[in-house]
Length: 602
Image 1 (spheres, rainbow, N blue to C red):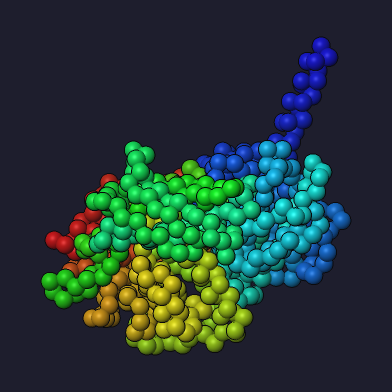
Image 2: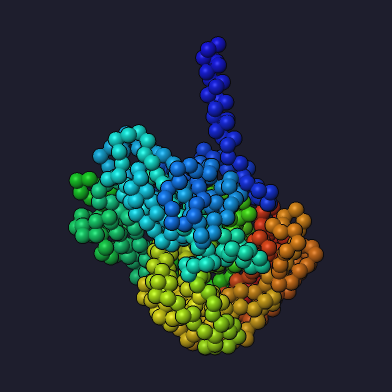
């Protein structure tokens, strides 16, 4: 009986601990909200292109506090928050606004497994918006500025001999009061502008490594010569330790192997490589080993594909994939969630939008002024979907001229704003540099914070010559980069043409349908045009697609439909914000989308 009572007590305590967390607020939620387990939040390994077997996930319940900016660590915290959901989100369990005058504090304890003794311990953050200061056992060990990209610290010198180690994070995010990239975040959400996101919004984890260990892998294919160039970075930039890189096919057979040193390009020849495409998203596995007395070994993957521009028989510049013309067609994907805001509730949810995009017959996604976790790009690589990656906008205030060439103004940014832009843009490009799905970089959208357009475009082209650059999506247009990108709502229109560049329709559509029971706002919904039912929306979509086909023959090489889902006050998604209702006839949409894609080569 005594043992039985003790067991009951343990179970009750476990149930009580689990019951502490609940989603906050009464807004709509996705079906995946119910699948969020506070004891196992986003348990998947977060970095698919640099994988180690040993790691410890720090997602889960942390303490949080919101205090005036400039203070010290609070003596008492406000309650618990579920990491990695932003404090403004429902799934955080908090749903509070922080604002530019406050800081958000996090605190938790962790222990180091005994099997990690003698190794260095890395503390990794997927992303924290915006400026993060990290303390281990009350020592400030480092800071990171940038809301969309991963960062790491070697915390080994700051660990104690005690079982419990203390981790504290201080975050400041000025949202729309600062110059930093923020995308669609605003302190006053309405129309096309959404709820601010503050703090940790991607996975936090620990892993043991050798003193000198692999930190980054860059793989760039050259299909014309059947060569893969691999550059591996390590924690010791001056290291002459030997690296071994192996490329393996789907049957785990080694098809190429070479050695080199960190920071130097290792060129590897693969005989008759299979090419990656939306129809055949073939991935090669990769194993990278740091040889020596204490070695490091990681697994990764890569692919052979080429994105380029060539003239067709009519002298029109067309985008080509693997040296063949391919019309790129997909939705504008904001990447927002009613329950998690920037963060999908589960990995299954993260994959869902991508799979639906493929189901609808699209072959591309424009990731709009947001950056996703590494696993999202991994899913795109595996599923076979092309990605245009926007730089999140910030420091806005330009004059916008969307229908003329060389119109509008560039923003006069401060040097601090300019330096931060380049730092964050470089880190975003580094995050996606080896993902075969990513084929186009988009530095600016609709003049939002646009500055030094030619210089930014040239820098982007030089940093990654293997992809195309769309310098100014929707204006202000400048004679640089690879693409002229027009926006027009609601229907497609070609009002400019650049004979020296690829011409695309970077945004159109916005067909609205508000569905009761699936709305973020009950009386503040917005769309470019509004309809009453699915049949009307489908008919209007098909009408625009047929108009688009005539413009494809005239010169458009890609198009982006607005948009994948409703987002907060916007009701112009192909599905509702909670992903519970598809607002179009899927079979008809797939059929017309495939016709649009094939129209360029017919």
